[in-house]
Image (cartoon, rainbow, N blue to C red; front, side, top):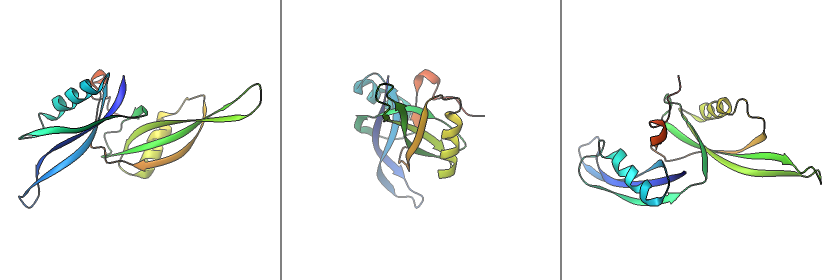
Length: 148
């Protein structure tokens, strides 16, 4: 399965009572673009009144999700896995991307490091950036386990 970013477009009632068309990104775990679109429609139906449609679906390079329901933001963490070629002794770096849910930047760092505890591979954090992702849906795990 792969992670897909799906943008849903719908009308939202603003605080001042006006209706505004919004486009929000969500992540779903799916086998194909078609399944990702169908999944995001099913996930959003209970929360969106009126018509909505999926504006875009794109496959991402996210390999892991670290959820913490105390946070309301999603951060993309890019790390470099460091390996050494036994023949040449040269160091190699392979980029890996994860999504981390947290309340703030420091929480993202802490949640990521907690999730990586016990990892035997050497790695370095290359970047951490806040994303516009509104939520992450993973059917296999019941929309991901909640952190205690």
